[in-house]
Image (cartoon, rainbow, N blue to C red; front, side):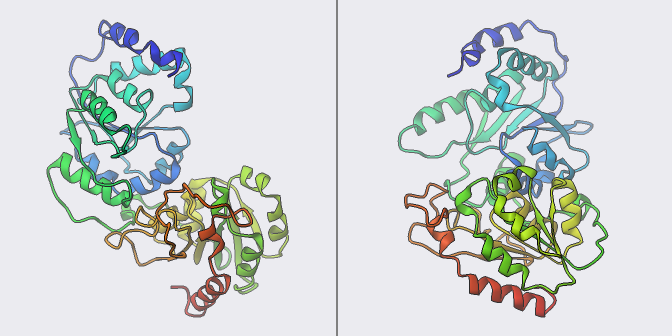
Length: 373
């Protein structure tokens, strides 16, 4: 527990005497997750927007890096950035608490299945709205009862969203059913036309490669990517997309970028989205850029670990769209949620190392031959 959070009872007591808007108004949605989660969330945000009453606004509180996906969100949704890493700083925490309390939201809804007591839950308490809603915490053997008791003190409405291993879009869809009291069939993992960015005009047929992951064990060998590039006509453009830091951490990709029709794309998610809208195909590992391609409707090939089978990758059959194909190797240990208990093979999770290069190349060649998917 940080020193700053130890003072929360004092800060919340002081907030009671702070002036704020007299009438409770507006809805605040809270998520502490990263950009990849925001891509999935963008597919169901329009449902949570319906929590607003006439003339009320809806605001999403999220991390600054996650706010980089705001171009995908419904246009009427406001975005409030909070740097969760700085909540250990007393001054930043205090100013954030004051600001949230002053807004006097009518309703605050946590969109996170897994929450942090000292972070997102502390922010919800400080905002002191008329109504709160959230999901029951994961059913762990050691801490469930304690976390459930803590959650019951914060939320007026707690929804049992099911097991830990579950498709994210399905979980949010069921949660929206509950808070809106309006059951609907889950929709495909595609963005509504109104949320799609414009396609960037591209000079030639373009393929986007998304080889980087924040988890090294998910990345495939550079040689495999080189062989993929050779599957495409020399007249096609091949873009290797990632953050500049990705290329710094993976210097071996310089050999791939030295090929005449291959170049790096580091402009960020918003421009990447426009490029994907005009691309012929996207190929990548389980990462934010890959899921962005899927939800934009771009033909997409995902080369995945087996770590999230049953938990979102591959997508559940009720939400998976026809523009994506998943290649992964079923394992007895699949669904480990990234907590691999086996030693890596050449730096990869064993389930990633098992991906058949020939199968991947054959899939790409077939796709190119028939004009992609």
